[in-house]
Image (cartoon, rainbow, N blue to C red):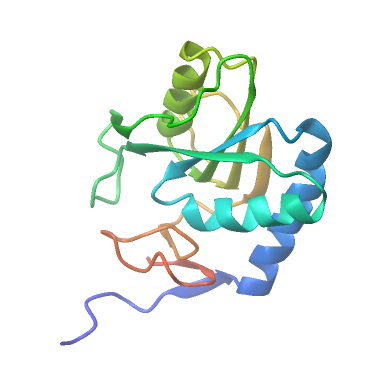
Length: 177
């Protein structure tokens, strides 16, 4: 079967990705504690969340892990403009600090919805971290508290970012345009 995808152009090699994650962990560690619930936004944020929580553990921060499964893209390259919630928090977050972890801040809709859900569930504080921020979020979206990389306005794949569910597992961040 022929490869149905154009060849990705590497923008951030794996070593640079890991350096950015480590730098983020250094900035985040003083702002959280071991009772913090780190909640990844599935599915794309999983790769970043795994690396980030390990980097935080190396700094003595052993967060409690959870996930929210939200979707705004489906298999499309552009957001549908609405968020579907497939799975909510699994652990209680009332009265706790929550660190929401996402792969990319693009439209900002997923992050805004995750923050809304966490506050509605009684989180004492909600912090947000994204690996990459694209230059065009919607004005109503809250700015992330921590940003690893200012991404170009290109279609990104790898390190959790996908094209119709494919190419998430690439260790580099690449452009597919």
